[in-house]
Amino acid sequence: MLLPHSVAKSEFIEVVRITDPARHLMSQDLDGDAVAIWDSEQAQQALSLIHDLPGGEMYRCFLPGWGIRAHSSTSAHPLFEIAFCFRCHGARIWGPDVPATLQSQTFDAGSSAASELLRRFRACIPS
Figure 1: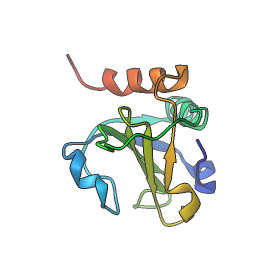
Figure 2 (figure 1 turned 180 degrees about the vertical axis):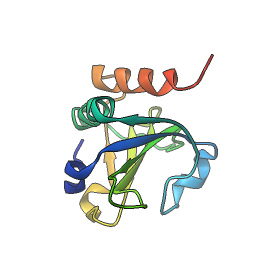
Figure 3 (figure 1 turned 90 degrees about the vertical axis):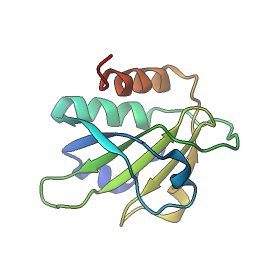
Figure 4 (figure 1 turned 135 degrees about the vertical axis):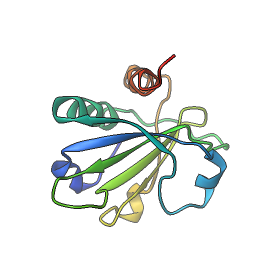
């Protein structure tokens, strides 16, 4: 998956459990409950997994269940946000420096990178 240039400034990410997936059909930002903060190596590993997501075929639903907000320590606002729908293989990226060409992407939700990313997301919720 292509990430914006601001990924180089990312120091930590919030893992977001999306509570109203239908809202993201037309929204301009990521909405949900922050369930974890990943910093330093954990954040870099997650961003590497996201970068390694291979392209896939888009289906129609886009009802994302998970997302991230990437942050730097120098700004109160996220560098960028990503909502992931593992059902339709779609991702939406928002942020002040995110070009239009990156805002809507597809990924192969069956890939090993996607499976590992989803496993890490789910591990944030106590069973």
